[in-house]
Image (cartoon, rainbow, N blue to C red; front, side):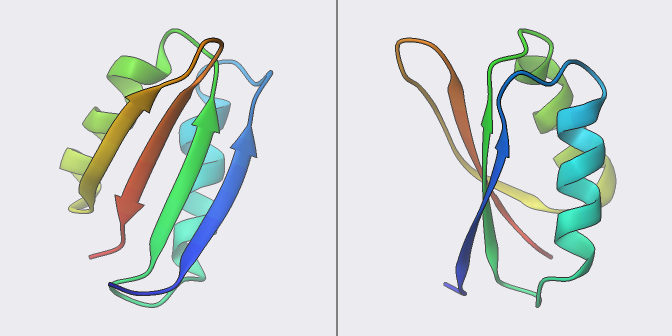
Length: 75
């Protein structure tokens, strides 16, 4: 497991959480993990789709009371 980074995308609507995650992942090393915090309902569909399309691994998805947390491992 690589270094873990966090992206706060709370309050951002589709497609911004995914666009910001893509930009942030570009600067990370292969194997690093990006934890994305999002409260956009569309992120539940968008983040897994982005990972599948870009070839990154969606390591974890979990929900809190008011947002979702996605952990993406850069491939």
